[in-house]
Length: 292
Image (cartoon, rainbow, N blue to C red):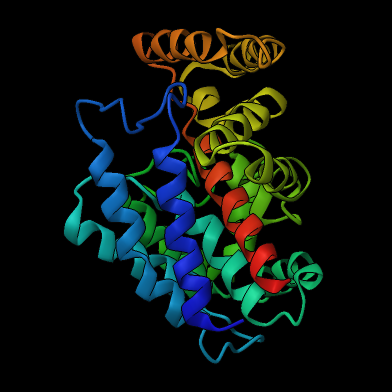
C-alpha cells in the first residue's frame, strides 16, 4: 500500500475516534475539557500525516526508525497544540503503519508489527523519551528503572544498550500501550478491530466508534485510570462498562451512555488509553478495507 494512502487512513482514524460521542470520560464533539477541546484533537489528527507518510516511505526493515517518526509527529503536534492530545495514538499508529507499508496483504501486518518493533534501536528509545517529554506524558518509564523524567535517562539507555522495544517491555506491566506494542497487539487485532470492522457496515460511523470504545473498555481496564486511581478503580469502570453494554439494544441506550460519560467526567476518570486503542482499531479496519 502506498505511504500516502496509509497516512490518510491514519488521519481518518484519528478524526473518527475523537468524533465519537458521547465517548465516556474523553473529549468528543459534545464534550470539551478545561485544558483541551475537541478541535485540539482534530488538528492533532491532521498534522501527523506527513510523519506517518515519511515513516512508510522506503522502509528499512532492519532499522525502521520508529522512534524518529514518533518524535517527529509529536513535535509537529506540539507546534500547533500545547497539550498531549495524541502521543498514544502516534505510538500505536506508527508501527502499524510501517508494518502495513512492508506488507503484501493485510494478514501480514500483525507479524510485521513484531518484526519492526523487534528491530528498534537505542536511538529509537531516546527519541521516544524525547517525545514523551515533549508531550509531558506521565507513566511510561516513570519508574526507578530508566525513569523518563530523569536528566540522565538517555545516557542510561545508551550505556545499557536499551532499545525502544526493551524500554516498552519494562513498562508493559503497568501501561497497556507498551503491552500492545511489545506483543502482537491483541486488544487491537482481537477485540477492537473486529468489532469496528463489523459495526461500520451495520451501524453509523458514530455508533461503530462508540461501541468499539465501550467494548475495549469492558474487556481491558484502562491503565491511565489505573495509574491515577489504582487497579481496583480501573476494574470497576470496566465492569460498569460491561453492564452498560448489556443495554445496547434498549431504546434509551444513548441516554445511558451520556449519563456514564457525565459520571466519568465529574469524577475525573479519563480512559484515555482506551481512546488510543480505539483509534488504532479504526486504523486497522480501514487498512483492511484498502487491502481488499
